[in-house]
Image: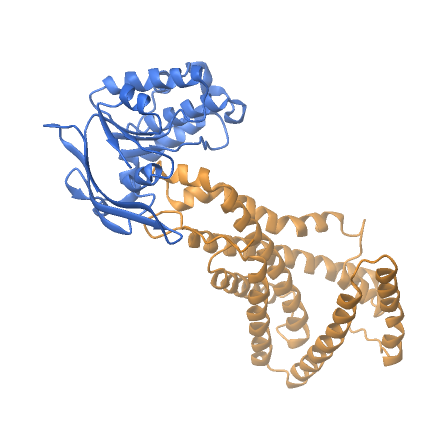
Length: 260
Length: 214
């Protein structure tokens, strides 16, 4: 898989024509997204450039500790980002942090232990980024659903508690549906991969000149790794977060209404 | 505020001393001192008097902010909440059954309480024909769901049944069916009932004692 291509700055600059097109469409159709597109473009340039330099440094230093530090930072900011989607879940940061850390550590640990990837920055950084990013999306979606479902199912959950059920038993159907919604997007996209869209890794490798066979094999490995990471993160996040809706005496907490 | 029921030598089931609860900075229940004896007690009062809140306090679905509650002479918070709720079973105002059939709901409740399930007998006690066992709960009318909720609570063989406005959402015919079932249950010696209602006549019909919240 030792392929490489060189991309000139003017090529990147030329692709901004398509950003201009997007802004023009937004302006023409009054979609009111011009500012957002401009900000998104500026942020993508700054963020990716900084990350590019960081990765370059880490590749050159070639030490596992820098890789772990970078992954830890990704987990931390991933949990902060996901917390905004989980606004209705009290104390969601802790469960999200643990979910992302466990998902990242176990899936990366497994692919290294199975000999699929070497434990070098060249593999761990990009794969770790994908694993943690997808785990973040899955756990955010799962907890977002959990917050809505716990509010909707309040009467049923309390009626079940009134029978002497534990919080875990009373919340089980809700937790199950939340877990499912966190996982379903990747399961669905795995089903349609290659038919409806070409996943990013495969596209990148083909562009970089790799053989289609290699591109497909690496893409499959990554898809399965992501399935594992998404399942672990959604499971851990929901299994930890639902507890925050209950008191130690197995009562549903009175939650403050979010501002209307 | 001191509220004592008309009870003489009956054993005290619940005793409330200066019990109060706030919600959103407002007192939902202000310093209630009352005794609830065994048998059938109806709690009446206007909307917002804190009747439902009082019931939720009795099986520890909520904790009072002030005062103390005793159950059979022991502080309520000395009971393990889950065990207490299987013994003091609350049927909420609006039916909230689990997905599935009437039977699966009853079995769930009986299993939680570690009790054998007499399916037909329990359904009949709640005023439901045994043929309801296989019905999907989402296909039931509100009145039938309410009786299924009652049956589910009875499946746990509780010592005390807490009923929150059991007929408020029902028409007259459905109300009469539930009242008839409750009338039968009252005659059973092994079950005490604490029933919340806004209807003073229903309180007279179903309560051996009546407790008024202002």
